Each structure stands twice: as C-alpha cells, then as structure tokens.
Length: 416
Ligand SMILES: Nc1ncnc2c1ncn2[C@@H]1O[C@H](COP(=O)(O)OP(=O)(O)O)[C@@H](O)[C@H]1O
Ligand SMILES: [Mg+2]
Image (cartoon, rainbow, N blue to C red; front, top):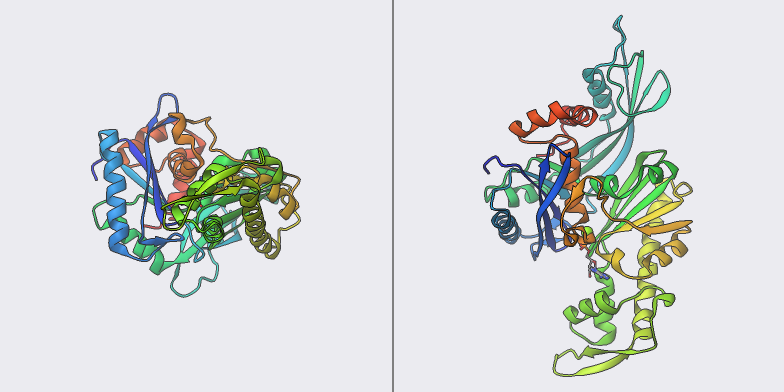
C-alpha cells in the first residue's frame, strides 16, 4: 500500500464488511469522508472468519472499489473486530514516582498502563486493546492527561479487550495476504462508543447497544469511564428469520419487509393496512396485515433486549446506566427505543449517530450502517495513528490527543 492521506476504517460485521475512506484536513482539523461501501461475505459469521478465501476476495473487492472511487490508494487501514470470542476487563494499574522532581512523564504513564495490563489471559487469547480511561494522581481521580503534573502515586484505569488469536489471525491474514497492511486493530464498540455517546452521557451512566445482524455489542460507561463491554452472538437477523418462517416468504423478501414496514412498538403502526408478501416460490403474492408483522417483530425485539439485560445483570453494573443509546442497522426500526426502555428499565433511550462535529461528508455516509467504520477512522485520526509522514505534521498541530496517541502506541494496542 503506498502512502497517501486516505485513512480507512474497516468494520468486520455479520456476514459483511463495511468500509469508510476519509481524508484528514489538518488546517480545519476535520475529517472529510470520500467514499463508503459495504459488501456481503459468506466467509464471515458474526465477525468470525469461516472461509479465508471468500473473506479475502470480499476485502479486496471492497477496498479496491473504494480506492478507485477516491482515485488514490488507502494510506492507513484500521480494522474493527467483534465477536463473542472477545472479552473485556476493566483493570487498575499503579506506578510510584520516586524521582525528586515528581513531574509525571509519558514514560511514567506508560509504566502505570503496563502494570494495569497484568491480567490472566486464556490460552490462545491475546490482548487487542488497552485503553487508558482516566488517571489519578495521589488519589485525585478523573485526570485525563497527567503529563507534566506533579505527584507521587500515579494510578490508571484501563479497559482491556482480549480475543482469540486464531480468529484474529485468520481475519488479519484474509486482509493482509492480498496486500493491504493493517495499521491498527480495535474492538469496534470502543471507537463507536467514543463517537456516539456524549461526554454527559458517559458521566451520568449510559449503555450503548449496537444492534447488528448477527451480533449485538453492549458497552457501559459510568463516571466517564468504559466499565464493561461484551458481544452477544446473535442480533437482528433473527427478526428476518422469524418473518420468513411465519410469513412463508423468502429470506430476502422478509429482510425487505422488515426494513421497509417493520415496527417494534404498537404506537408506530401507522394504519391497519395490509402489505403484499411474496410466496415462498416467488410466483404470487398474499396480503398480510401490518399488525401481524408487528406481532412477529415485537416479541423478538423484546427477547433480544432480554438477552442484553442478562449480560448487563451479570456485569456487576446493572444499577448504574440511566440512559440507553442504540446504534447499528437494527436501531433504524421504529419503536426499538420504546422496547428497550421497557425491557431494560432505562429512563431514556435514544438512537445514536456518529457526531458530526469533526466529520464532514455527504448525508449518505452518516447512515447507521457506516457508524462503526466511520468511528474507526475518526478514533484513529484523533489519536494521530498515522503513517510516518502524516504523523509528523499531525503531532505538530495537536496537543493532547497526539500525546495520548503515543501512549496507545506504547502499550501496543495495535493488535497487528
Ligand atoms: N431500516 C431498517 N429497519 C430495521 N432493520 C434494519 C434496517 N436497516 C438494516 N437493518 C438490520 O440491521 C442489521 C444489520 O446491521 P448493521 O449494523 O448494518 O450490520 P452489522 O451486523 O454488520 O453490524 C440487519 O439485521 C438488517 O436487516
Ligand atoms: Mg453495525
């Protein structure tokens, strides 16, 4: 891959890959999205590679297609992974500053983070991300960047994500073998949470639920810190399966009906009308009441959120989140927020979109299906995770984030 200023975020999803390519404008400190696309891939299931050759072919087709659209090669590629093989922990690290000057350096921060990495890891698992959440100096909590401050005891909270080395290697191989270099690997939920939750929501206690096709990802923020994250190995494609089975219609028609007419809560039923549904052999149509479709969808959506509830109940943080934020393709269904409020007992639930503060681009790129890929690009770019020639100019022009970027590098959150 030649060095260009195109940064790409590749979201490895459920039976598909989604990629966003953007350019960083250093003058205005904004990201401009140039192109985005997704491609279905039979070689992937719930984020796990089942067939390297198919996954490779899909990656090549998607990435070269975007390069053609941009008229340039991709200069830096960031991968977002998911799957129930991922496990996350919040851990604590400490470091005593025994020097006379007591001024905290990047090196001290790295050593505190290194200590926080000491967690038992399962056989065949490896650390994907170590994300410093916040620091404390001499028990004073909530410090984002302690560099240059004085203190004796430096503490850090980190969020560590581990994953199966086998699954991660297969994925990396699928993309790198055809010649695309991966510059960083993240658990996709982390950048997504960073981009769709407001600081206020992270402080007050919030839950991000990313509703994908074959997975649902859950992240819990409390006091501004990501405390818990987990992937659940099924998602909104189950609604499609229910509709196909109960309406006696092909899966593709069921998917189209779900996305066009599906609602998850009665108040969103516009009228008592009927919709035409193709028969299984595709030769004729029968009419089905919209209320019947709701009766299929609503219990399944309730069940999906009940699964989320089970995970949250076991997390140790069940009483803390007050706000829910939904993202991913499934969040587009009218009424999902209502079901979420009722099932999870949250005070308020909204649909989250990637913040447009630092990203510009056509309206189409802000579709929730691109959210994770967009968040990957934004997350990497805000932290200065660039090719060398870009990094040099970036670090001259930014303060805090580029330094935090160095810390990330130091703890090798780049899984590849
Ligand atoms: N308008 C819509 N209404 C309801 N569901 C939708 C809509 N658009 C997409 N979906 C569903 O969202 C799921 C895909 O979510 P998405 O975030 O795009 O994929 P991934 O699983 O790769 O993260 C699929 O089940 C799809 O049918
Ligand atoms: Mg998604």
